[in-house]
Image (cartoon, rainbow, N blue to C red):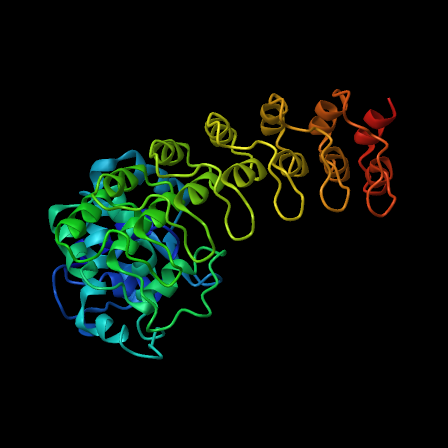
Length: 403
């Protein structure tokens, strides 16, 4: 690659990467020949060569060990000139997919202890190829993705991908743990590739992975409406199938506030809108806890949903919304006659006591305006909510309670 092309390619990666790249990652990225089944280490440029090809626009942040543009205004300039690079995300997706399809990387997938140190570009490709592809995907990129994903996604790439989500316990994920190509592309939500893999009949539409999840669950979790629509449109799909933790697609979408996906799933008669997981948590309970007002309204629109249903700890949607200071959700729930505004949990803690303890002044004000709420009610420890508010230094809440 000539110096000018190398410099422009480096600028494209630095300005459009999903996170700052380390010097060794960038050098390996620039060594990839799109479409090649072999990764030639002889193509890897030195970082000093890159810097010189950058004509003073590229520098190495020695403290962070990353490569960056010389000034943030250059980033702004490059984004203001979209014609500087031709379809950058498409090109970056093709490079990542070529790297993952290479003989060297696929050999790592069958190794118990893969060498990631000498393959520094593996993490970025495993985690972000789909992000670039979802933004912009060429026909050739689609073919590369189908080639990669017609078999199970490699265990090392699966681990690197899912490690980004802190709620996934991966200690039990090993070389025998299934995570299919259809699961992977549903995770990213790339509609063309989801449809392509289904049409190739590589996988069952309801195939489960190491988590007990089907492709629909991953698309729902991440709010990919297009992928959800494709999966729901296929014959034989099970839209209410839970994973091994009892979490069905609707619950996963509701807890993350994906209104469009929730609406689609609620449109299927097989879906139980009040189905609890193994921990006794319903879609409404999790949506209320996380403050997703739109999802709460959608769920309350179904007569099967009990707006005052508690989990095994006695915590109802109103209590969890109040605990986390979600005023909008509190107002919505209080608009339902079935909701007890003073309902305690198993330790006699009420929505008002949690709101006062955590200093949620707006929620406290809403609740004390309700005549059914007792502001002097003690909890299991004989402590009043006024004492908790005072102890935690919430002066305005104390003033509200004493008014």
